[in-house]
Image 1: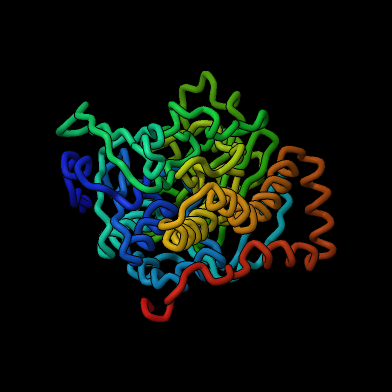
Image 2 (image 1 turned 90 degrees about the horizontal axis):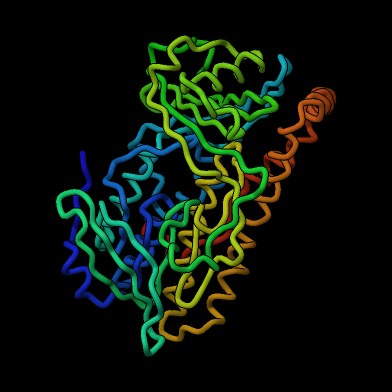
Length: 404
């Protein structure tokens, strides 16, 4: 069922907003919901209509689940029939390592994002879909930031300007809202891969891909993650070298090739899936804040994830940004922006460090084989890393008890 707009473009432009949030993924919807819950007048815009799916591993790790519990949002996972995860199976050149996973789930982005968006609207957020946003300048008095809103769909091409005391950018790795502010755009890593993903129907893949396990096939040219989601379909998400996709007449051929090289069972109906690709995904942001602007989620920088770290960073940064804004909006200064850079680094940066290290390792088959041999002999070596990536976050928000 489509999630409708709660406001039209003309009214959005007339209203003086406390916050405009750009992007209704997990980071944007969580931030908007928390801001609205604190009584701040909040507008959430997205260039797509909802529900919609995205290229994503569909994994919500234990840390992200704990964050959703803190925020009183774990009911979304239950209503979506999210699939509990307990194992991570990595395979390369026929050798494998199986690592226990604490407390994660698998759920499609269409279900997760729609649930978080509905929670934001229920909290009082105004929602405007099918609307692209471009960050403009700070107002003459320096007390607000302007955003150009352009609609697609029925009102295609209609454009107006909205004003807010602060703008939160959660519009993904492409930073499409920063067309006029290149100094804030994230910088693509030289070795960045592209994302590629699709969903295979329940009747079109081998039963050996069991529920509750994240499968990862690793090869020199990329890796492929597979996990069963609600309804039994197999979600596939890959990080591939761009050269691997050039000149392909069969979209899924690189996926089939990596599965074969790694020793995983072949999936005969790969071409029947609806495939989507992304821009280069590994990026660094020079700074996740500007004048009356905070960046969160993938918009603030992204590293190839492995077991749901991307969604975890989005949920945690969305809640933390809302908490900071609600406390400091009345006395805003550039000190708030510096504080966000520090908080974001503590929340997300160290976990991105581990993902960056694992991504580098995955590019070297000999190193992967050596790591597999070591872990097979001494399996407890990986437990601290898994525990760290899934460790519940500290308090993300006040008054958790009142909303639970």
